[in-house]
Image 1 (cartoon, rainbow, N blue to C red):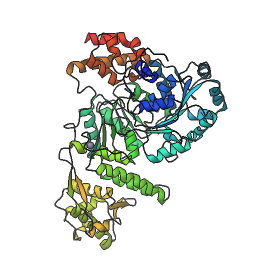
Image 2: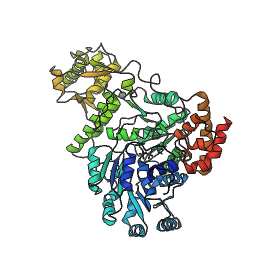
Image 3: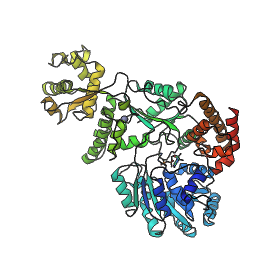
Image 4: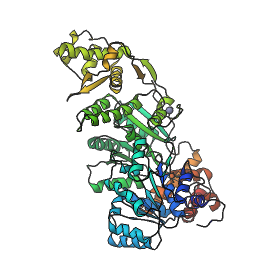
Length: 608
Ligand code: ADP
Ligand code: ZN
């Protein structure tokens, strides 16, 4: 590429094609490595800017960048987004007709493509390998590289074959990218993809624009509706639920209450799933209610909130799911409602799961880490990053424990009361009961079940009058979370663990979290609605630009963000450019988009 400035070719492409001023974080070093012919293994959080790390070298190096991606359903959107920037991109996968495939092959052989997207299974066919031999390959990018990990939930057997790339084309640089953060996954990727000699680039996994909140569950559907109405009206969001049934129920509840919501889970017909996904990507402000089957590779940049109505099974899962919020860097919310029933349910699911003791131990460890995050009184962000082996000074100012610090209290005596009730039921009666009955005994309630089992005769009957029912449930929840109590059997009855004895013998203190009287709700949490902090006139212009964009996207049948992202529209609304030159200064306005939309955008600005 020729340039009339003194910038490096990579920086020149960043400015002209993408319309951005500067590289972020490690992007420059990664791009230099690959342009220089070196291999790279890139770990960067969602929204960190991984795509540019292979797109720019593909544009600078001679030949076509070949991108291996498991996300067939999203390839069309990726190619469209590049086309909107004036980049020549295409894909080969099973969805193409014979003629379409022939045309892509011809363009590749003729050197007319900057980027070619392939599904991993494509590389197993001789025809594809021979096709690649007939063109010039600038680089191989292996996207979602954690799919090679046999222990991860996204494992794709075809990824294991990708080490052949190096054997067959040893001089072509390779770059593997993932947002999965643990050191174990990274080692496995390096090993299985034959990338041990590659330079490793591990970015900070902090997502400063996401506010983390974990709230006690209390009528969760109300809480969700409240979140959407007061903090995210009209915003795009994802709501995760554990079961298909709850996905359907919550989606229906939102729709009944006037929120545009769609369901997504593996039990829906493929056609419905595809339509719902496509609507979520294309329309503004839809809420997707989904199981974790939804989300990998969804690079919709303006998802403003991710809500969990059920407890994720691991911190990795939680981080990946919440990471889908705010890829555009604008303020976003990660919100989780969590309660006693979640702990009971998850412990029980592990207890009854297939697999051996080692497998169950592994699941329990993952759950323990997730529970520790829920129950922490420290900064959630610091705790999250520590889990991924990264340090953070804490006091981030944008998680609930920083915004409204919970109190810590000495719960040792309360813990002893619960544990000795469980102990007495077992020792004196040979019984075990669920949390409801244990709390009734502690509170000294006169219920039919108490009388039937003569529980009013136990010495612990009524010893817990000092706390309210909700407080006792919080105590039991924290005992379960800390492994000082566990559940067993079909009715999830409470039973002691080895560690319970230490508490009963007064050898161990139990510190507990006291929910703040006024949780970090809208009151203190930053308002995340995307235009909330704009001056009224700018907000009006932003809305006018959004309306223009919606019409443009609809006419093209493309997602709105392919026209311009929210961050760029905000930039235009605050800069109010009056000339094409001024518009070109706004981040995200590259040459191609300036030419295509410049006039229309300037007209919208002038009209406000
Ligand atoms: P990832 O694949 O790591 O999740 P993306 O590549 O989708 O992230 O980038 C996230 C967003 O950040 C995109 O909207 C992208 O255009 C934008 N972006 C990436 N790099 C830069 C940069 N250097 N300057 C400004 N915006 C950037
Ligand atoms: Zn914090």
